[in-house]
Amino acid sequence: MTLLDLLDRIQRDWQTCEPALDTSPMLTFITLTRAQALLDEHVRATAPHADLTAATRDLLFTLYRSGNPGGLSPGELATLLAVSPASVTGSLDRLETRGLLRRTPDAQDRRAQRIHLTEAGRDLVRDHLPVHLRREEELLSPLSVAERQQLDQLLRRLIAHAETHRP
Image (tube, one colour):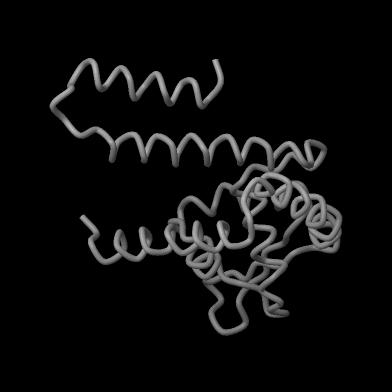
């Protein structure tokens, strides 16, 4: 069963089970989450030798693009990744063990740390980034430039709404 078949089945099941309820919001969320998981699976497959999860890939890319010679604090990384600081710690440990980043004491606060890419980390990003971008381009290829812009605008509207209406 394809993912599209599954989504159709879920919609039919809800229409049969609860015909009086508008389950379209739930179906939209299911579609978004399943699409994200499937797309990430494809993107992750671009570099199986790199053994990167979405979280570790994003962390490496964030350190690379920050261009900050002083590194970033774990809190700054968490903010730039839009995740909790606790969720960054495990990724930092795994990447440090692999020699892709290093932690150094903060010059202004001895209790704090700064995170830096190692040369091996920069090399991995430089090698992986073009492949990663080609794969994302391929996955987005069914959409025109205008459709991609529209999708981006719609998702940004959803994000803005959700951020201003936090539980």
